[in-house]
Image (cartoon, rainbow, N blue to C red; front, side):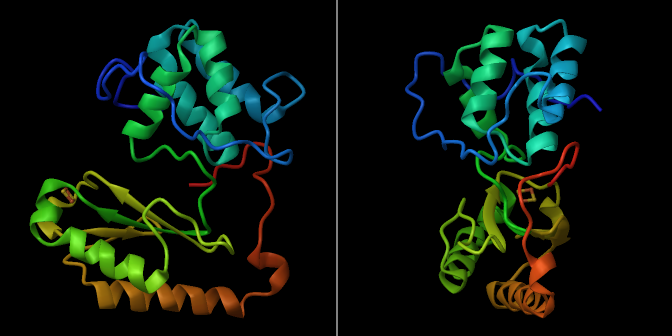
Length: 210
Ligand code: FES
């Protein structure tokens, strides 16, 4: 489904801006960006549907994330070369929208909303409490790949502020202690799983990890 937003709205044009610290690919997850990598085909199809025009950038980025689970610098460079867009512009779009990820996400995600309604209700303190307990900074994934701690500008549940989304389920009127208990329970369930299913390799062809 085409995304609601377009590349021409939202983020400021960062063509002239420096592109800081774009994560590097590892050999196991580097897309090949040609017919030999089946995962790239949906990306190519998304660009083709939009005539390889810059206006199709968001749809192409969604396709990259569905195929690989996140958006690496090699993919951004390939999109830029094909759609004739500067890397800084693509990086600006990817970092503006919270649903795009520059790094692989953990098996579980905890998204703390920092939008205005949630901020007024103490979302910053909530984030600190979770960050302290989980020993992770926002934007990080735990070393064992179990959890990613993320932030968003608004998750569409302002009436339940402050809101936290754990594995796509919104928790309204969230409190740090309750969220940390829930994350601990998730961790406990992970430890009960057989080792063979507790870890995953790079996304398989066509596999979407959200
Ligand atoms: S501002 Fe947090 S849900 Fe809207």
